[in-house]
Amino acid sequence: MIPRYTRAVMDEIWSEERKLRVWFDVELAAVEGWAREGVVPGEASAYIQKHAVLNAARVMEIEAVTRHDVAAFVQSLEESVGEEHGRWIHFGLTSSDVLDTALAVLMREAADVLIADVDALMEVIRRRAFEFQDTPMIGRSHGIHAEATTFGAVLAMWYDEMVRNRQRLERARETIAYGKISGAVGTFANVPPAVEAYVCQKLGLRCEAAASQVVSRDRHAEFFTALALVASSLEKFSVQIRHMQRTEVLEAEERFHAGQKGSSAMPHKRNPILSENVTGLARTVRGYVMPALENVALWHERDISHSSVERVIVPDATSLLDYALVRMTRILDELVVYPENMLKNFQRTRGLPFSQAVLLALVKSGLSRQNAYQMVQRLAMQAWDEELDFEALVRSDRPIGQHLAQAEIDACFDLELALQHIPSIFRRVFGTVQ
Image (tube, rainbow, N blue to C red):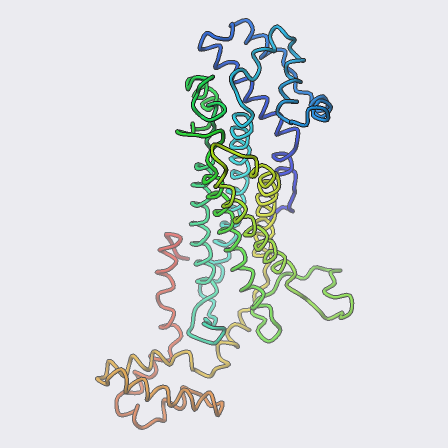
């Protein structure tokens, strides 16, 4: 049973309390780093580690006067340990040292949540792919009947896509997990690289090799691009489910629960509202990529134009994708599939999906491809226009009969033969078959 979505984890990551806690960790780690360099007295560092207090209410109170969040935070820490020891808080640092290093920690935590979401979704896709590995359905191109596939093969493709998405998130997680404690323009003028190395090592981050006042925002842009690709895959799945739920198709539908209403006006309605919701969320997540890209180009060593953007897009994009992933997992877990309708729809075009098999059989018999194509297309268009059975037309066609024996025509219209390599796809994707 897939658990209901809860906002608690992401809300905690992006809470004001959590943000200040990570700032707190950065500041205290910097004091320790300075103590290791022999600048901050050991007893002062020990005192700060023991007695420093995070007081969010006091930070807000000071910020109302200073109108600078980091300055207010630093002042509150100084107050908690007294002037004698407080002078070592934020020593040699600039605000972005704290902000960017803390942001890396928080974005990494958010990435961990998203990767866990992807794992849960992949497990559901895998289970349902094997459930419908041998369930035939019509494959469509341009929305038009093309050739036979199975619903399991469709889901195997989705799984393979999510493998790549997971890899993208892993890479993005690594890309943004970089901190910097290198001062106002990144030159270590007032803080040595050893302090940065200590802080980043303690927080599980890497050091930005060459920073300005900020960690370069191409890292963050890559992160948002990865989120957008995951969201786009979810929309791809959603769109196909929505098409499959159309009344005239009805090959699958979202589970309609007891007491649920599909319309305030039409009691009969059962709409793919969850998939439509995921489609809209995907659009929103993708919309955050452009602001992230525009954040890359800051004035000189840094301006503040990126800050207001990130206060919105970082928590929003990660939270929305978290929600969309959990929602898609539930959609697929509860998806009601109608194999009989899949077969019925496959048969609606009366054998036309086997036209290429007939074409290739004629080519094998010695006909040129162009002559074979014209021969098959003539019958295919007749089947379309007159709503006739394509297989019957092929079997009764004298020119085709001169080139193909009935046993060869039987093979052309053999559904099992058409799907014989589905297990190979499953081995490639999952390493095994049923």
